[in-house]
Length: 198
Image (cartoon, rainbow, N blue to C red; front, side, top):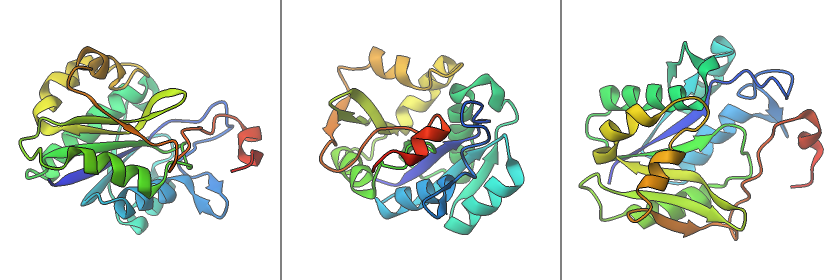
């Protein structure tokens, strides 16, 4: 199974006070951390979707090994960024059988969590896989979406919903991968979150 990671990193981070993609978190920009996590977890390539701060975010992402797509409509929310990422992956990596989605503002998602979700999808080279990490707090990221779902998923992507509605509608096909032991789904929304213990 050939998998391309999609790091959603286009937002302005209004509650944080600036774009999260370029935010330094313990010595590393968040977008750099997310790209490295996807690659270390087993993704073959990574696509970083940027928008609010294009130049620095692009520089960091490419230095970490990703290719970049700009979502000009980033202000419309995460759904549009995921659609832009899927379009870019489809064009750049025609052999990819699945995409693994990560959010730039979740630095406690580990390479082990990525590997666990990818492992759950092994053997589904037909592109039909759907898998997601699950925590005590509920379903979260990483999310693995097989290529066979991309066409039907695209029209459902709007606002900040992302793939949530599509996954809910296909929950009978969705493989849930327990990840509490290897990752933490907390996100960084406000400056005080940066000081929270890891």
